[in-house]
Amino acid sequence: MQTQQHYYTPEEYLAQEEVAAFRSEYRDGEIVPMTGGSINHNQIAGNVYAFLKFMLRQTDFKPYIGDLRLWIPRYRQYTYPDVFLIQGQPIFQDQRTDVILNPCFIVEVLSKSTKDRDRTDKFRYYRSIPEFQEYILINQYEIEIEQYLKSDRDSWLFRAYESDTEKIFFASINVEMTIAEIYENVNFNLADTQG
Image (cartoon, rainbow, N blue to C red; front, side, top):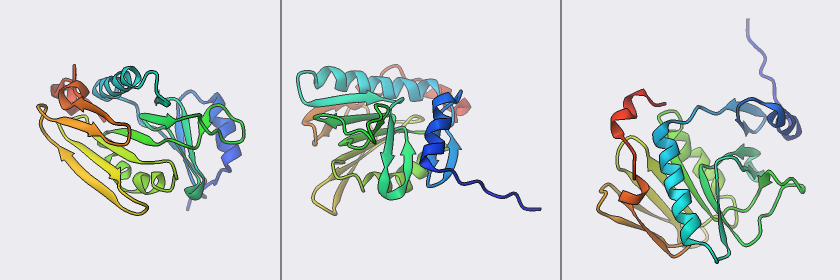
């Protein structure tokens, strides 16, 4: 006997998300519970957010972390990027102050359960956002960072970092951060127990 898949409208998802005990993503009709975070995931996202918050004060770039929802209309996706920046004023979906449309810079901390989606489908969805210029993927289990920088309308430049002695230049916002600062207080020995 087959179970029938229930497809939700974006409105049903948003209503459910407002009262849910845990966050879920919306994937074109499907509601998918998000996996729990780990201490390393939290530490890395916090390090990047705090650094960007400090470095970008008195600019028109504003960083946000974790709890603000992103709507990607072309692919009918609601997601929660780990860290992202908006240049200028946020553009909200239908006057909702908890759903934005215009990030220019997104950071995702990779976990075993999300790394493939973050590198493929999610990156494809993010590229449909006109303001989106730079994508950073950070491995929480070892020193490994992937940087994608939009170079023109349809091209992205890629660079990898695998040493804590390197620096990463976030070209879209003209800010440099050391890899050691990204991984500050991260304990890779905890990696075996994290999802």
